Length: 445
Figure 1 (cartoon, one colour):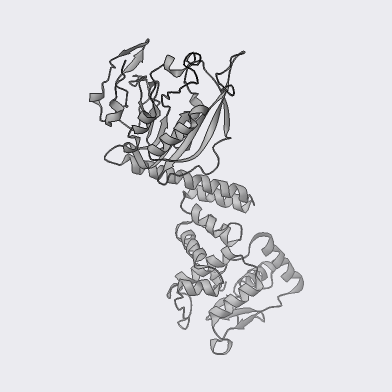
Figure 2 (cartoon, rainbow, N blue to C red):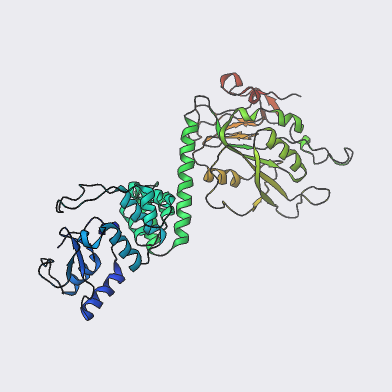
């Protein structure tokens, strides 16, 4: 077979049904447009040449001197061979921007001496990236994307772009993922499932960012947290202390004024890139927004916990019956948001009958969204969750059968734990831990 000229190889070959149709047409109607040869290699007509072989019009050893199907390209007469190839392909083929960007990058990275099977007269001058972009009528940004795909992309991924099935910008994102994932994305693109491709790329790119951020935060000399889940002991002042204290939080645990909660230096344990999840009841929404700001976060959104109750139980409330709580979200720095929505904005989960207790489903949701970031739960009840640190008046040391916590050697714990209604010295004291001073606060009677 005749070799292909490097300029011809800038453009992708046609494949599949399109190639089969070309071969069938040549077999029925003969080859009407001759194959152009320069320096012993095919400059234009690679697809016609392959189809003519498949149709039996040519033999493998047929060369330009043996059949009527070839014509030689003479630069002194026919002009610039590169301009000729680009003009022919852009006029003849409907290539999208991504395909042209891939061609432009191949042109910009072409070097002399890459082909040893060509005659010495073949001259392959270097073309700068801006010039290549201009020649192929694409932006330099897309050409840079194409370079990423060529440098880091799996062959299947490159082929998907060359065949017009995947945008080069999406492929550049995919090229940063594992080879296995790139192949999966290419397969989805080949099948025409573009929505799946977009979702997979976003999810995997986001997962990579989250993992990289977690690794960075865990490497800090002073421990910082990328996720903080807090359920402050809000002090809610009822309309009337004579009639409104029967269901107050103060009957169940010590509460704190908003100004005291705001004063806690949570920012000192928060990483530069951090997400805060803050529980609040509907009446405490203004206070919660104030706390988010004082702790150094910007409010983003919230999810609603719709409390489902057994029997005829009902919540308290003045204007409306309180059947929900808010889990508010704030961020600082550049935290990777979920690639797609984690869930709906309302989550129905059972109320378990214990004042201020929260369903485990919410912590599990946070874990799925941020599996590698170091996490702490403020106002935690009981031992820390596996993979979390914990602090609070009712936090307890990790139990011996609790799985190993990857984020710290010793879980954080409040200075006092509530046991059987009394405040007692915990098994692990605050002096045993390297934690911020505000996490060492003691409960007053």
